Image 1: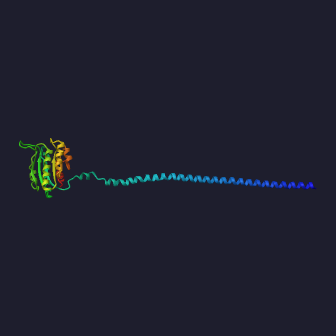
Image 2 (image 1 turned 90 degrees about the vertical axis):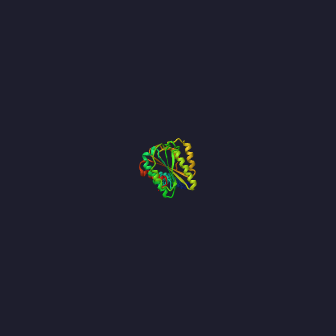
Length: 285
């Protein structure tokens, strides 16, 4: 009997042990399942985080490019809007040239070239001087009249002549229209003498003066250096020099450079054109 009871207890112990082992296996399987499932979730989260970070970096990289494109598109507009302002602010060539035009009439010595070169245009030149002299006199300014060419008589020592001193200009038209022509234009010597005479008048009248030269060119032995120095001395004494060149004769560059105002009339036989040019040179409106 005792032996039969011992066999029963052994069977009971074996069943209990099997139950413990099964439970342990289930626990281990549960832990393993939990660990694998958690890693998958973490991997998914990490992948999502990486994708979000990459997208953010790409967006940040694209934004400067978009900004550069915007700036590039705006740049031409700025250039276009600023261009008209620059163009409008820049002075025109005509305006710059007009700044040298005599602004008002002053007491004026008219010096007229009466050389052979002036013969084809003499009527237009004489008419222009007469009209301008009348305009200067009308502004209550004094008028003087000289003519020049080269010595053409045995007794003449210089090529210029004073015909009228500084007066009201009323006699100018009658005198200028009686001039003849001959000789060559010794322009440099004549303009220096006339400018010095005008400077003497400035000293006496205490008022500025102007010499208006109407010429066809220069045939004179006075050197460039001597001419420039002598004319500058007279100009320094409040004398202005205006020059009107008629015709196709060679322009005296030294004279042009020394003049306060210089004009060239390409249609010297056109009385209206010459009158306008001489009047402008004299400051007559």
